[in-house]
Image 1 (cartoon, rainbow, N blue to C red):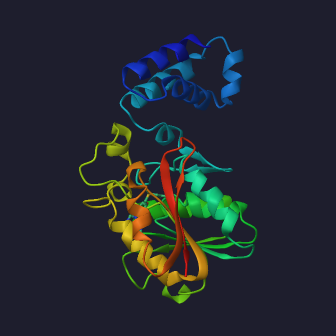
Image 2: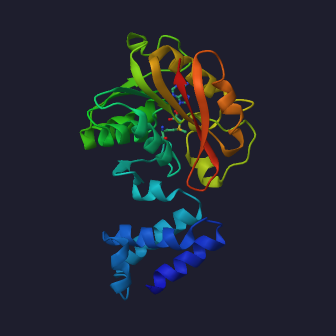
Length: 275
Ligand SMILES: C[S@@+](CC[C@H](N)C(=O)[O-])C[C@H]1O[C@@H](n2cnc3c(N)ncnc32)[C@H](O)[C@@H]1O
C-alpha cells in the first residue's frame, strides 16, 4: 500500500471517520483517476497528486462526506452525482429497491416520494421492466441534483417539485399506481447523528418531527390515494421504528403490513398492500 495512503488512513481514524482505510483508498483512487484495485501496484503518489490528496484527506478529516469530495455515490447499478444540497443515497436503501422490483409488474406505474438525488426512482427505472416512474421532491436544490442524474442516465423518470403533505400532489394519478416507494426524513427531533450527517445532509432530508413519523404519515395518506387496489407501498424507516411504522399502515386501507430488515439485520422498511 502507498505510504501516503497508510498515513491518510491513520489521520482519518484519529478524526473519528468510520471507515478510514476505505476512504483513504477511495480518495487516492479518485485523485489518480484509477480504480481502487490499481493502487496496490503503485509505489508513490506523483507530487501534484500528493498535494491534492493531502487537501482532500484534510477535508475528509474535517468530516466532509466522502461522496461530496468525489462528487459521486454508487447506488445499485448507477453512479449518481451528489454534493451539497442533496442527501447522499445509502446502501441500506438498496434492499428496499430489491423488494420493490420483486412486486412491481412489468410495464407498471411507480411513484417515488421524497426523491432526493433520484436514487430510488432511477434504480427502479433502470432495473424494472418497462416501468414508468414519477418522482416527487420538495426541495429545489435536491431536485436540481435529481434533474442532473435523470439527464445523465437518460432513464425514464419524470420529476415533480411537490410536497407529500399536499393532498393534491400527483392527483391525476390517483388510484392508478402499482407501486409507491419512499425514503422520507424519519429521524426524531433531537436524536444524535454523525457529523457528516448533521453538517452536510440537508435538514429536510433528516428530521421527521417529534417521533420522526410526520412525513411517514403523509406518505401513508398519499400512497392510499395514489395506489390502485392491490398496489404496494414500501417506506424506509429508522431501526427503532420497526413497530411504529407498520402501525401507521394498520388502517382499513391496508393489508399485509410487514417490516423488513436491511443487510445488517436491522429493521429498515415497511411494506403494505392497498386493499
Ligand atoms: C432521506 S432523503 C431520501 C432521498 C432519496 N430518496 C434517497 O433514498 O437517497 C429524504 C428526501 O425527502 C425530501 N422531503 C422532505 N420532506 C418532504 C416533503 N414533505 N415532500 C416531498 N419531499 C420531502 C427531502 O428534501 C429529501 O430529499
